[in-house]
Image 1: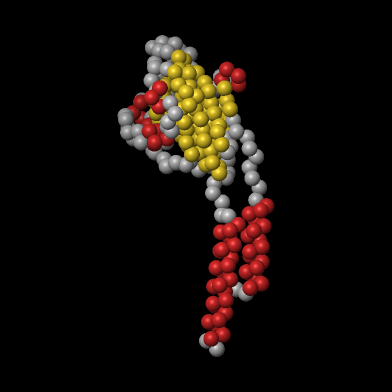
Image 2: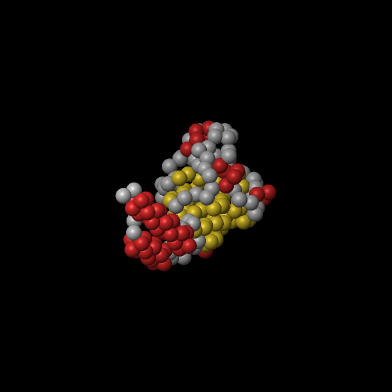
Amino acid sequence: MNLRLASRLLALAIAAVALAPSPANANFIYVESVNGDLSNDPLNPTLLVADLGLNSITGTSITPGPGATGRDFDYFTVTIPAGRLLDSIILSDYFGANLTFLGMMAGTPFTVPSTDPPATIPPRLLGWVHLTPGLIGSNLFPTMASQTIPAPVIGFTAPLSPGDYSFWLQEANTTTANYSLAFNVSAVPELSTFALTNLVLILVAVGRRLQADKFASK
């Protein structure tokens, strides 16, 4: 590798960082009382695209009574675009009977039926949690990813990579649950111009050493 080639590599690397497009900022703030009821259909969840910073959902789930029809399921899919990471889900606010179920799976739609036997559901979920007032202000990820009752969940390690993540939220008791969830999104770390410059300088040094060894061996 000669100095001219290394210089070209350096120029291209710096240009790539400078010209790389940044995703448009489009944080979602979904409020059921304003934007409408979240989907009750797991195969057609409400679709939400997150972006850098705070994204939020504020909603209500109602269970009329034991065995009653018309339960208020909230199904939604959060898309994390390329170049972004889902760091955490914070329970910002909650008022209910401590039996509000929140389950998460990878992909869309939500393909785990709520009518399946309870013990068969967790092994198909990345994680789940029962929302309670004691969790207000807390990151739900650690609890969701470590559930073992009634069976272990798939589990996951935060932050979550770009992709689709679908959620099932339902108040399981005979009451009304009001909740607010904050989805915190960060940017995927990029190789900085400084790091790229150092990389090219290393390549230049290696190239010079190879050339010196070549001449020394003649």
